[in-house]
Image (tube, rainbow, N blue to C red; front, side, top):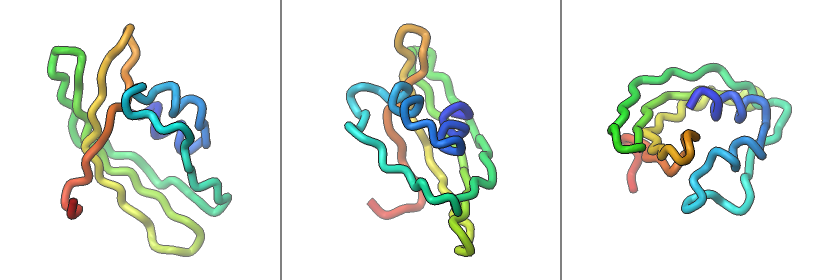
Length: 98
């Protein structure tokens, strides 16, 4: 999870796509390339290894674009380990309407 956060901070699209599960990976990744985007931090709240090659990671990431208020992104992400590499499957956003 931390490596994917770092990839977002550094704008490393190829790394993000390479660490995305093939069943859910988008064809392209729309990232905010604005030079005014400033990542403010990552707080990993919990990590649950299910022991079957899957895991959950709950985190809060914060960022700011220009002079706008900071954005707080709270997600519970699912990961699957394939050939020793953890791949992002998908995530849920607690507190958001579905």
